[in-house]
Length: 419
Image (cartoon, rainbow, N blue to C red; front, top):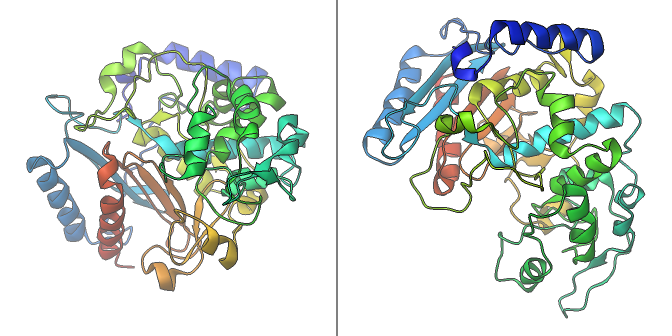
């Protein structure tokens, strides 16, 4: 349950928030009423015994010490068939994992920032086919890395849609850290944290060499971080403010943010691995990372997933028009672009604006055509399968286990789905 005490919300404050929103701004979904609407698993088409097998398997992983804790949510037709926290929030803790446990969701930030940008597209303030340099002029003279080492001027402009679809030529240096281009990015200030998203994009990224001509190859990248800089430039707000005003605020996602109140620190899940990824999200910062800076709960993130599943609306609060959501689900890649890329999601997959797409489920052999999703490096993941009207959210904090649980969850869930 979404408990008032656990969220630090009192009924009067929530009522004031809703009344103020109705008078002065966009509608806001009730932040107190839980997004978890329990349904009957069998009536929703699941085999209860198979769902029990999932419970047994995750409990066994906790008991063996493989993970300190996890959270899994499975639903269909807008209702929950299965949701449970397993184990505790971290090594040596006694606090159990629940739907109120806060996880660092890393790249699950990307779809949220993409939706934020699409609200600007709807308002006519952002053009998907405009060059990034129209908003951040430093990108007018980008260069492309050459095997010989000397970058040469790009012959194609980097477009806004390239940022969302990982076809911009921007990279993540950690994927191939020993490559010369990756070393050049690190040396050029890629990891700076002392600049805003807008200033980091213009002062750092725009001066670094791209790995390919924009629009020609898929390379997992910090394109959504640069998109965050574009959002800051257009709105005059920090990315944190823009995301809250346009997406998380209207959806009532009160436990989702780039910075969390210190009072919420005890609710964070912790990894059993020592890793600089798991920094303190209650500390102030200058750079808001559009590619991976949010933390959230399963209950909060479900609001976002259900908004997309319901064509841009959640409980009467419209974030995007249906046609805008449809636009985000158009594959932005080709076989050639996918073939030249690195870190692509896999066979049968495409990529839309901010999230992956299943374009041939005979190759994925699990999730149905049209499924859209993304994950976070520490093991968080969500997807929605419109073919089966099926959704899931899974949360752990262990980067080494992301791929393993991606496969297990797909197998478990579709094995339990009877019709």
